[in-house]
Length: 108
Image (tube, rainbow, N blue to C red; front, side, top):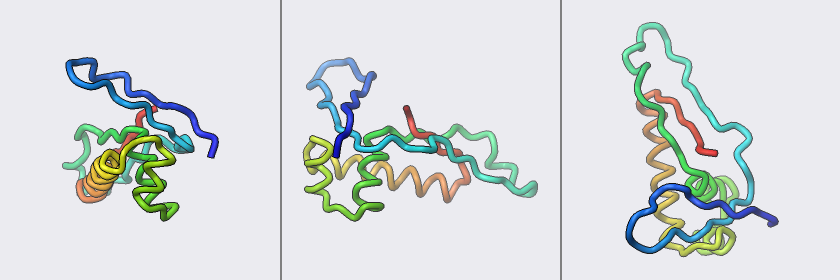
C-alpha cells in the first residue's frame, strides 16, 4: 500500500524521538458531531475528543480491515506494542464519544 509518512509535531522534550508512522489512507471525514436532543443539552459544550492520525490508522487497519496487530505494525512501520497503544487509545476515544455524546475530531 503506497502510504505517506506522518510525524507528530509535538512532544519535543527529552527522550527518544517519535518514529514516523506510515498512514495508508487519510480519513475522508475528520469531524463527527452528535445530534443532541433538546432535553439532553447538558452534554453540549464539552471539549471535543481529538484522535490522532496514527490512532485512526490503527483502528482502521485492525477493526475495519481485520488485520492482525503484527500485520498492522508492519504496514505502519512501528512496533506491535505501539500499535496496541494506538488502538487502545482510539477505542477508548470512540467509546467516550458515544457514551458522552461528545464531538470527535481526527487531527490532520
